Length: 255
Image (cartoon, rainbow, N blue to C red; front, side, top):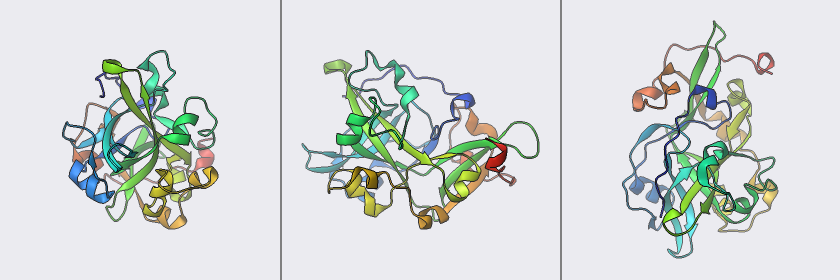
């Protein structure tokens, strides 16, 4: 059972580390069909959220031994290790770096035994505006409208009525055109890598963390969007609408 914890307000200053916001609008039935799952592991209906922030309950796909296959579950975004004193620090662990996920105490157990897939329509990033002060928001999504699938980890903290199930998104160095808006990106997994990530087939740990192919990256759209997404209280498909195009700044000017 996943219990409700106080929501944490996440402002623009908290999104410097990818991935801090994303959009998720698919229904549970759509996700069950997309991932060949045997069903769901939660009772509440999934509602579209076009501005998902840490501490939000989000859909993931994991393997359930009791249900005999893949299930679509709903977990709180922000991983809480089973050994943590309390669940309050989960929001700070919304992401796990691919470079250290196998060894960092907070993530290594989940990486070894509890990997999941995190479906998303796309995600948001911010870059300095080349034409003046402030930041430009970007929506990164598949140009063909398909689902983005992030490598994720899941964990359970507590017991009985205090039990909380949480998850984290694995990130890696940004590559190709995505690097023009941020130096990190989610580790995206094409369909042919799902089974290995979920532990349904054997895989070398290093291979699990391999960056996505150039073909996948070439199929991504970088869409400039309005500033409304910077406020976590705003939601709706209009957040993803294209605004007047601006050119991403070069990474050489950021670091």
